[in-house]
Length: 89
Length: 411
Image (cartoon, rainbow over all chains, first blue to last red; front, side, top):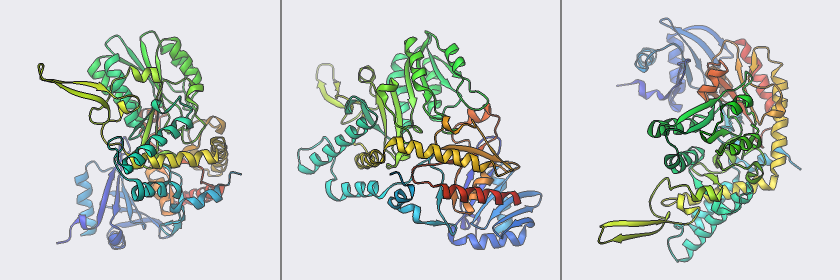
């Protein structure tokens, strides 16, 4: 059974007012993760196929082809996990 | 001649690529990269001399002890301490400050006393005092910072009083790179009968630091920010002050004698001599040896040269960043009052967005609060990105950094 943890290496939760979640995908799974996310989320903007401004169910986030993503305005880690599950699984 | 291009050849990591781009490492305020001389010194220790120190009479232990003591001597000379008895090896700046808080503060601070800190401090120079204040009941007074992030000296002078027992400030801010006037602060502190502790994490690696000339009572700094290994740092303490300071941790090595009194059924303990009184348990011997190699490397380059290079780099970066319409540099605009650190923000983007964007191009910068949340509050910043330079960085790297930042406008 595939799980979010199969794709995600680490989640950095920033402190302070700017409560961002930075998701770092596993090196050997990052291309697959990026491809899946690009398929499922709506692309608002992209720069040189390197950085993608995306939205998914009213959640805006930025995806980097280097295998990282930054999610804003999420209150809880559990909410992030739910979004990631929908994007990746 | 100081040539960063030649210096770079000593740093194996600078040859690697990140995200298919040549690595540009601008996160030196967090930790520095290591030259092969440091890496080899640690390896050489483990391959040829590894043993515990001050424990045995055999040859390896004698060699290890000699190297470890030489490391203390080398650091003492580097900061112009009177000798190795004034140099305690610890894990880093944080442990050094905690040592002062719990070794000196716990036994000397009480309800009618006051500790003076500033709003530009790293959390490591705030949290230990706040914790201890709850235990001992002393007051903490925070010195204000001006709008450009510089220390408000008038406020400092108005806040210090006969109640003040210790003043604990940064030598160099880890957010803005501002160099504080240590001599001025020490003079005022001593006039009021207070001790002066300085956080030298961002100064000792980047400037010539002479503890006798500055007059500080304590100076805390980390090895890993000055080309040395992680897990090793120093607390300098004036000998007479250290003699009145109690050990922070107990265990082997830090004692002269532990004798059991059969009548009282208790042990009587006497402390070892300085600096070992403060180094309980098996120390980070290889780390000390690595730090010695780092100090020798810095001495060979000359700290005046290191300072001049970083000043030039800071000025160059600030000048070039003006070309980016959407970039704002925080803190003072005069690079001569700063030391190798440029905090900045990009309009409409969080600092983490900026750092991730730069990372895509192989450029490493720090984002967030840099463990200095109160200063960000004072400067009304939700966070900041920070480029910090060291002796191996070049103006060509700054050119690349600025070019990539110009790309960010497309977001």
